[in-house]
Image (cartoon, rainbow, N blue to C red):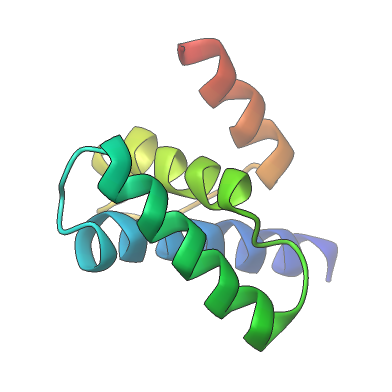
Amino acid sequence: MVRAVNHTMVYTYYEIGRIIEEEEQHGRERAEYGKQVLKEFSKRLTTEFSKGFSADNLENMRRFFLAYSISETVSRKFTLCWSHYFKLMCRKN
């Protein structure tokens, strides 16, 4: 059960990152446009789903998508929990 919840959460965050990058930002660099997109998307998600969707968290989801889109796209087998992926992303930077 815990693994299923972790997998769903990680996959959801990956998909939110994809939506931000591909559909909201249309692949544009972050700059001022990207900051505004994250703020607006944060408001929409928070209204619909409650907390957990701050602009900072959404930026982490976007970074997660960018960091793992190449290696995970084919299999989408996310075997770690979100906190582990987050720590790995921080080490990459």
